[in-house]
Image (tube, rainbow, N blue to C red; front, side, top):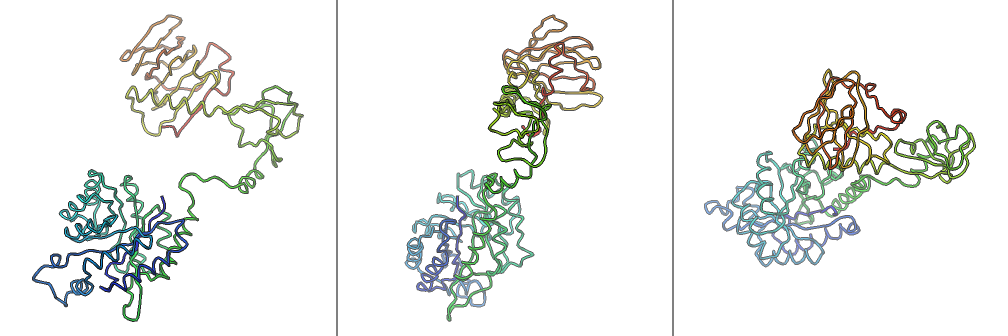
Length: 496
């Protein structure tokens, strides 16, 4: 979705229809060339002045805003003409109503989006009428506390309204030290179901704020605009067409600097630069064609040759077999080897473990590490394996153990620790010194020191281990091939 830029005319049409049309056209010219990157909309303000201003105060020239509103009054036909001009210039249409009668005018004029001004944020009679209009809503939050924002968000989202929240500071113009752009972060984190934007009132010469707001993730921007003439002067916070163009250019530059939302793809130049600084894989001894290349057969040294396998590609998840003989001292090149990656198997296993935990309504403490035991390698994990989550390991130990359907945990025993198993979900076949028993959810089994034990799960199970302290050197497998396998464990931190 492109960032949306909303140009706020407010009363800067000056009650002069021809001036308003010229303003729209001048802003359209200022946007020229930015259409590929941004969407644009123009915004009016509607007040039903005959009811909005209290009857006892109408005509008061000594009250600033009454004088301003009444001097810039336009009739319904004039507003319709401005809306038609906005559409003719390719702008989306937005309008801020300050009373219920103005919402009806918005509906009659077919305006796309309703904007709630900060002063009306929490005006419940007005917001009820706005919600009834069934249009998308943009709402400025200046001055509102989190409790009020929570209420307004809940109000509109429960009515299935498309809602954008705008960070806004209602000082005209807003000095730099009052811009509070970190509020964009707060709004994005607190209201993930809303689009977040920035309604600006800083000096129109300020282009840094829009760049920072865009970098923080704001995607809707609102700015007051003005077309100065000999008759109509600009105020301190409205941007003229030249300032609008500079503002958009800054936003476009910020967007290019920030780049894509997901993880970026490095360029070929970056890839080549990084490869040239990595360590290459070299044969320590002659490697025969058809043989698997293990740690003992290679060394890692700088610099790498073109097409050479690097240390960054050498991991416990990767298996390499020589397609052709590789002499000692030679670089191990991609063209000379066949490669198998096991990481996909690991991720698939984690997905199935999470599903079993969910099926058993098992709550896993946050930031718990996951340990996959693949006794004969990940290739045989569906046949032989176990997944463990260590909850605590002090003088006492608690683990969650997960077995996928069809898995067997090979026979082992412990000399130092005694274990008690509590089955939380599913059934488990258990052999203690060769004697079989089947246990199910709710059953408790204690395994004393020195007792040989193995498990099998037909349909998948989760059980809890409670024991004295677990020591890494206290698991003795009756099959010596398991102890001889240096790659029988995989640990994951970011798995939940």
